[in-house]
Image 1 (cartoon, protein in one colour):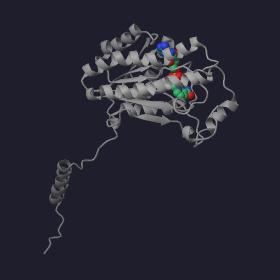
Image 2 (image 1 turned 90 degrees about the horizontal axis):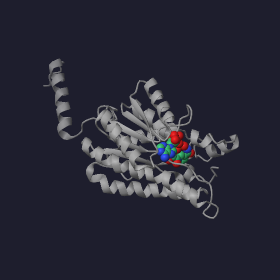
Image 3 (image 1 turned 45 degrees about the vertical axis):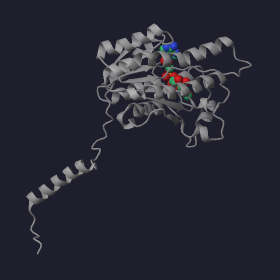
Image 4 (image 1 turned 90 degrees about the vertical axis):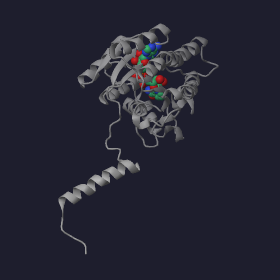
Length: 293
Ligand SMILES: NC(=O)c1ccc[n+]([C@@H]2O[C@H](COP(=O)([O-])OP(=O)(O)OC[C@H]3O[C@@H](n4cnc5c(N)ncnc54)[C@H](O)[C@@H]3O)[C@@H](O)[C@H]2O)c1
């Protein structure tokens, strides 16, 4: 005969056995939505943006800080970097700004040293710097080729050169996110820019291979058209803006936050099994036949 009387102590024992079984059997619940970013230290290279606008680097800086990361915002223009820092502080986050032309080796070293001297460790690097080009190889100048290659690639190389040893010393691996573009894989006439962003993809994958054994993950984001101060400040007509938006399969206009969220995800423990990955963040633009301006 079964004894159907309810005994609270039996229920407690059963619950406890269940928990133990789950731990032993490996069926443990993840238990929380914690991204594992609290008290990590990040550098965002190119984390400023014109005025109060939200560029990809500023968005990543603010969102990393909201996830509990201490953020060094580095930018050629220290005022722009400090604007981002103020936005983070206004939201209750921790950040420091630093100016420097990050095509220069000594400036990149200075930024990494700044992170270590202030917060004693380095875990995350968002290599966000990039400038555009417009022309074909026939019409492009040699000077602009050199400038685009210098600005779009050298800071990624130099910042990583100094950041990786600092991450290794910090003892908990690290995450590097390099910002490429869908223009690398689906060009639209920004030829030097496309070439530089293609090189960013190769650089990211080579770095992932080189430094995986050190626990350092290196991933690459390919944004589609994003409405950032860098693209709208020189002047963008409403028609051009609509064309960019309509190129998305879901008819969404990309914004800096979309790229910032991808940076946070790739930098977090949730992406611990992801390295050498190319993450396209473009609302489907690269699958659409529509021109994106
Ligand atoms: N906006 C888009 O539509 C789009 C699309 C695809 C890819 N991207 C890429 O996203 C990245 C960010 O673009 P964004 O439009 O968001 O710009 P952003 O608003 O993030 O601004 C970039 C920042 O980099 C800084 N910078 C430039 N050269 C520097 C240097 N030598 N040293 C230090 N700082 C420097 C600038 O001062 C600026 O504040 C770039 O790599 C860009 O190519 C942008």
